[in-house]
Length: 325
Image 1 (cartoon, helix red, strand yellow):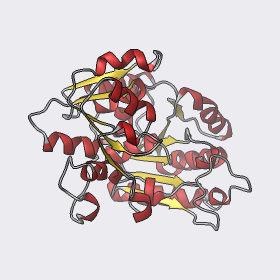
Image 2: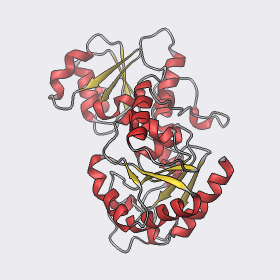
Image 3: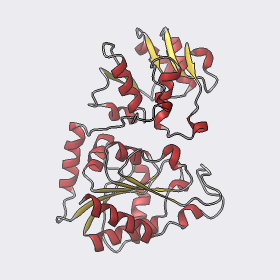
């Protein structure tokens, strides 16, 4: 969701050198996107203070994350201008600060970083009050990601199918964001049996148990790629899908940025703030009396998910595939 703000910085300051500092697990998102002159990888295994030296010599630090640590490192590196939201008690470490306001205005999270540029004076455009502005979340697979995609698909080769459908049944935040595994299994069986689809199951290594549970419930056999992909490889694979069916998660946002047709299944979270920012996405969300609760686990009966039937998701999938065929 930071891509639109980064593209704006690139547009507003074309002559400046733009360097992105990112943790290893997310840095690959920014590779080959035509934004940064350089990408520095933050080594999470080292103590943060040991990395101050890498930040010296910069004129500005635009802190898109809200951590106190990020502002402290920029200050210790003596970067003259430090821009960020005054949250986490870090306002005194910033030279230019803003206050988050998209929640009060009911706007999508993608505007959060754009609004920081406006509030801190990096941009003169009030992005929240510019109705014809469409944030550019565009993401392209990298060359390495496409090579990995080709290798994985070849290694797991299967007879040609009519459709390739990706399922993302996990969600790092917690089980209150995960539609039930038995329903994903029943859905996958119908996709294979009735639509002649090849079903790929994605996820991190820590979500392999979820994928195996789904396989155990199924009559048919899906292709489990859970834990087998790098981030560039996952992006490449999602770009090759005719349809992506997912919980509210990081892969959901990557699919939106790739403009992959998508069905997003929401439980405890708010699709207005963090739904897929894509006109090729359909959200299925039952607005029960306690939603959105934003909880990691449900203290009652997970009614926001139990009311989403396999038939409803399958019908949405079939309709979407008919439209994109």
